[in-house]
Image (tube, rainbow, N blue to C red; front, side):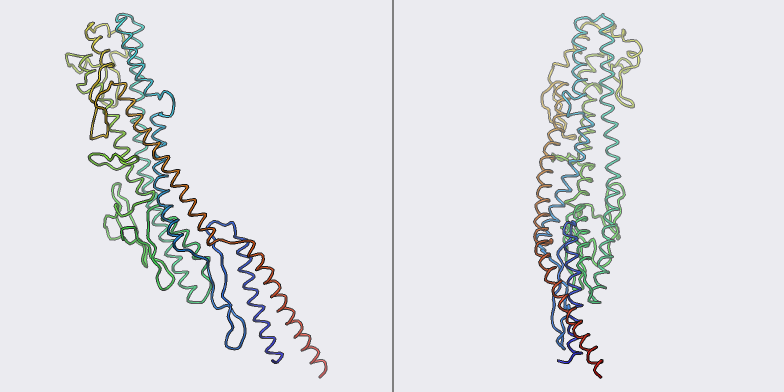
Length: 450
């Protein structure tokens, strides 16, 4: 071998070692970076015997990646439901003991029992009106807060659809960059890491399937085969009730399994409402609060007992722009003195009498119970739903964490191995550099002897 040939081989070895050192250094420095996978390179000998990088390798595990994405979809779906159900608990004040609504109802019933004993006592009359006002305020506050939550969820759906469009655009751009890099024989591992993370982000919105194309790009479809991206990304629009794609097709029922479905289902209205926790929740909450209001108005036993004549002006509660105690009583509670003994007794007795409050249109199930039981049934129903979802959400999050860690263990960086590689590559680099230095000195000696 001539000195020139030896120098060429040494330079090629130096360049190859330098590239491998860069990969190893990058692996070590990104060992704790979420979503980063181990990178390596295949070294071969070219036609003239020089070492060179023939291909770049990225650690992957398709099965684990798919499992992680599916677990992300489930965790996001239940996590979104859990987030909203916590807000429902706050609205209903159901985590305190006793809840404010339950306390207000008990106080209202107790005030009427006291009025039975002292129907002419102005202090007792004042108490009946005041606790009635408090009960109405509690119910109205729940109605108002529920409406705000409904609006918030609508906004969340719009933001999620926007995020879906942005993520699809990101994947389309990464697809193009990967295609270009592959055509130029450049490493694409970093771009593929970004692609996996972008797909996982979409998985949190909806459950998707990923298909590899021959050019290194990916196509994204929903679990039922609806295209999200195959070449150019589709653009999705939310009109307040349905989601349509670029062609105007309704794809609402295709985007399942992630946060988007949870948001849509939480606000959805069906007849009858679903018995599943977290589904049709706004519909059920608004409907059951209406059932509660109807227990005191709209020809109810309470309204009939208090106002047997049926004149609207004589009702205890009015319900025009929210539940309210009759203004004539608020301004002058002693008007309760106009009630006969029978009317006072009959009204008080409605709080200890069982009624059928079952309403299939709102998901309320109470075949026999008092108005106090009605309140407790409403509160406990949503509390139980919240508890169920919380438990399921915790389990789904644990499953997601498991697959994330398992995937990281399979495709992430083993720092100990990389440190060994680093030492070996440094030695190889130093050896090539020494050979180049020696050949250079030999050239200098040769030239000096001429």
